Length: 531
Image (tube, rainbow, N blue to C red):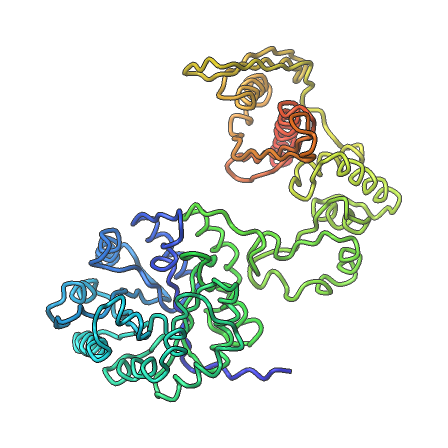
């Protein structure tokens, strides 16, 4: 078994979501967004939050100003201002961007320095000696101004492989000038774990505390970070949910969860790791970047089980197919219902929803029904609400809140302010028959308006129901326009979100089925709450 090093007395967890993570394509953060994310990161318990580049980005300058004015009260983390070494041929004390770092008012600053000789020549257009002078001058000036200084050695690993003596000289220069930590950056993300050890060990000979900053271009950012830790770094950088340029950065939650749960290092405050799933999803909401369901530890699928063989084993011991207890990171085990499901899947899923399926014959009946519907194109692993309705129907527990007598939709090319489609829904609820016409932008919107309007007198609570997402997938593409389609609809009442599924060759009919089930399940939950 691999013997991991003991946790160092002072180990830094450094988050760069607000700066490096914000460089992700399509991600735009306002100052308010950055303040919200910083508070979430502080709740997680990271030691350092890199807030951005004051002086180079107006949003970042405003962020630091509002933080300094008291809008950001941090309990666990220290805010870090990021910048660069002074300009070629200038003096650090005369460089406005260096001054902007001081003006940001943070205790800690992090500056990026060139450590690859080719970048010195071709990007800075200067000499190797001048680049070293830029590092020394900037660090010395910032330290003299009372700042703790970290130095990011950009392109360090590529630079080391090109000119190891010069890359190490940059590290040495930063250390001698007073840098507290020198961070080795795999800026292009091209490293592999087995390459990390010797290079990190060589840098460690300089005698300064080392950090690691990895990009994920080979899919190895987390593995490379852990390999660097094993080689002796005491400072790890990453971003929430792996955000970042190109393929992203090392995912800070995955890194910390591995160090805490696998190495046994208590890096975060007590119980903070149990907030990881909530915080990860909350930040996803702020960035408006959908969560990766398969993200380690905190993804919705991280502890989801589909195969019948797995379910049978999990009934004996949940940990037989799980590497940790999901609650350690605030997640939960999920049992998926699909055509791969066995009786054990159905029994466990039923138990999760509060139904007793211990009767093997009943469980087998439900299992057969699920497999039959899945063969027709339904996907219950994506639609828990529809599965519960099916389950209640098989158990004889499904309440008919309303009866749909008829529905139809008209749509055309003419677009009016109220939309381009008209739907009519006739239904009976609580003994009263209602026939209502709804107009909307597209057939589904019109049907939603009509169904809601027809139900609202009998069930006022449907006014809170909102369709939040709608997906259509073609299941048999070879059939062209008469292919079977699957629709998934997400609905919310402001407190919970649920998903229903519809299937058919008629996309409007399939959409109606999912919408119909969405209202039925929503009313079912409202009744349970009222009861």
